Image (tube, rainbow, N blue to C red; front, side, top):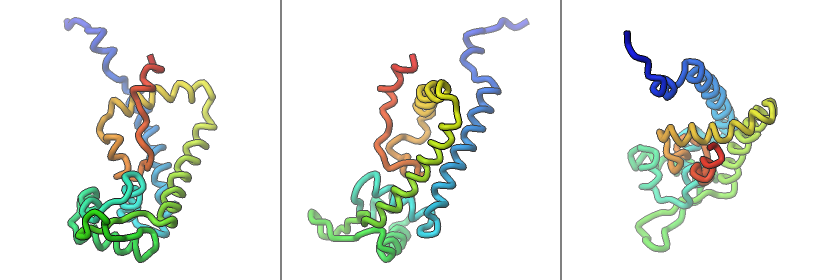
Length: 179
């Protein structure tokens, strides 16, 4: 008979915990997909990624956009040209290096990104409003700890999936509240 290692068993997540996270993931992916769909009549998903990248990182050159998207420079250029023609990006010469072009959001481009983010925030607020207040309070440290433990998508790259344009939450600041 094998000895039981209670500490080891306690460290393993239960099937119930795993299933709960999977269900929550499906709900969050649905919220994210609906927020992207709210602007899909104006831009494609790759174009939205460009807009979110520039919204989160500030003005970019074409090489940075292509590298951030993981595409060839010519594909990045074509995508940015379409966004410039749509009035969502402004292209200008880099004052520090005239060989480079600088891409920045136009007010219309910023409004589109803000609209998508606001759609997402409203949907999440509506879901949270349906939860009991105590469970919402308990959710904050648990979700921050989950996100910190995942480390699969660094907060600095969350824009790549269109998750955010904001600075990442300081999980270290919040982790003391979970103890």
